[in-house]
Image 1 (cartoon, rainbow, N blue to C red):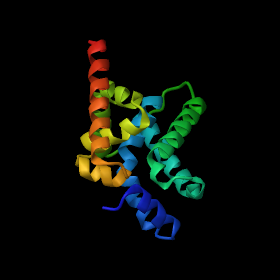
Image 2 (tube, rainbow, N blue to C red):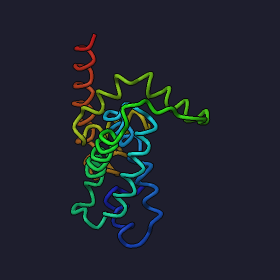
Image 3 (tube, rainbow, N blue to C red):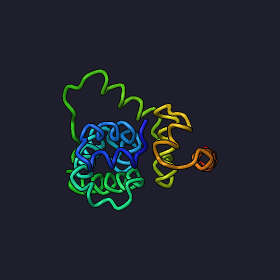
Length: 172
C-alpha cells in the first residue's frame, strides 16, 4: 500500500483514483472529529464530505504531502464548527435511512463516550488510533501510510491508549 505522501503526489500528478484511497484511510478519523463537534452522525457525514471536497480542491496548498491527515482533520473541524453555527436550534428529523446508516448511528451512540475521548487526542494520535483500532490496520500499514517509523507509531498508540484509559477512569 502506498504511503499518504505517495498518494498525495499521485493525485497531484493527475491520478485522481488515489484520492479514493486517501478517503478510505482517513474517513473514520474524520467522522470522529466531526461527530465530536456536532454530536449528530448525519451532520458529521456532511461535514466530512465537504471537507474531503475542499481538501481535494486545495491539495496544491498542502506544503508537506505527508501531513495530509492532520491537515484534513483541521479542515473537518472547521467545517463541523461552521455547520454547528449555521444549524437551527430545532432538532433535525432524519427521514428514511437504510439499515447500514442506522447501524452506523447505533455504533456511534453506543461508543459516544469513547468517540468523544478519541476526538480529544492530538491529531497524530487520533489518526493512528483510528487506523489501528477502528480500521484494523497493522502497525506496519499505519507506518507505511503515515511515513513514520513503526516504533513511532507504536509509541503514539501507547501514549494514546494511556491517555484514553486515564480519561475513561476519570469519568467513572
